[in-house]
Image (tube, rainbow, N blue to C red; front, side, top):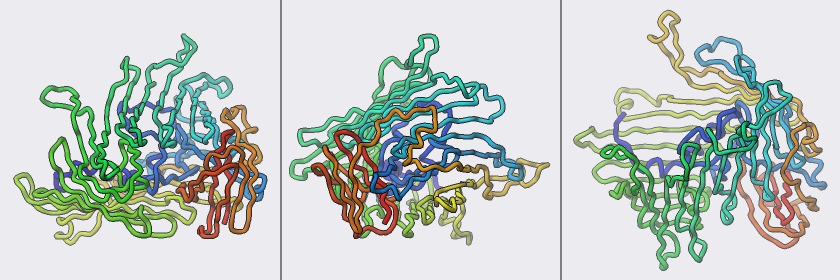
Length: 550
């Protein structure tokens, strides 16, 4: 493995790499504090577009996430023939990869709660971990009028009867890019003052966005504050430069705090930048500092890249004519080498693969050669990810007659409920180094898949019939408004006083239609492939989501 790396790689591929890890991007439920990381530029609730926005929906192996992404599944009166079957009980079983032959041990049991829209509004956890002094906990979620997560509260208990507050997280959103979180604040419960305070484990992540008179983003700043600091600290800034003759950004500069080994302190400086940008498409809404600019509404065609003010190579991108989420790019750095990246969809289930090849030019520090990282992600016919594997190939391996080497992998064996056709059990296998000699555990290893976790779902109910009534955790979000929805053969019509907008999502969460109207609308479904869809209707009085089958 060569030591050279392209410094712009992380900025250019962050969307793609994240998309290649749809399961790992969704954390399991846990009592871990939301601000365990001092510097985390991403927010779980941020909605990504395209492949990087793929979610595994309710199928979150190892438990629901501690701060759940917004889900909106509900029924109108006209669609009552399509019930929403959801599990009330979720049990998690685990074992260490070091003891692959041991029995699975029950680790956690969740009781799940839903509001009448079908959104999960909370859960209650019983942990079976030995020595856990607070084995019970629960979480409650509320949503705003647009169906976005607004408040999350977390409580703990010794006996599962009397709960004490632990932390609360609130969210604010950008008024233009309405899915983008501009503030995520977590406060910790202080028993002495009987109030939420900015204590140990709490913190605030904030994005300040400045736009010009045309609504284009000029700057996006990321600020962070935790309990150890008295004021927020500016961590990163994105600055976009426009030219009137072009109309869009021709340069994007990143600045941030970087450690200076000469002064032994963090120094504010330019970190990366794109110059002489050409776009295939852009909406000029550069709110997300972590965006790849290769997907969704912002897709670069070409740019000169810079690192710390120094030229770092020329970027050129090509997009598939049928599916723009499939693309390839090249970064050519004269005298150093070349990076070639390609990602493409491999089947109708949304499976995909990407190759990342780096070619090195010989210099004083290294010889010439190349490395190739490949990631293969496979989904089943329900759209859920069932495997993700990373392979490595290099010129050295080829010269030695070796092929692709499996570096890392995850497999998800999903069993579906025979009646409801929803996940009933998910078994997880990870690719680990396992000792083959008990007498010499550190002297002999083999790599193989080991099942370390299993999640079982049971006690299914129809959420459209009011599953929230099954729990003492009361949903605190607004109920969906009563909108008249009419199902036709090739269209769906609805009447909605005070209509703001409506969107149609496919089963993978991709937006198929975005429109506005006055007091109602009609969605033509004749050209849509067969499958499950979700129609989200936003009005001045609330949100209605309707599940559509074609």
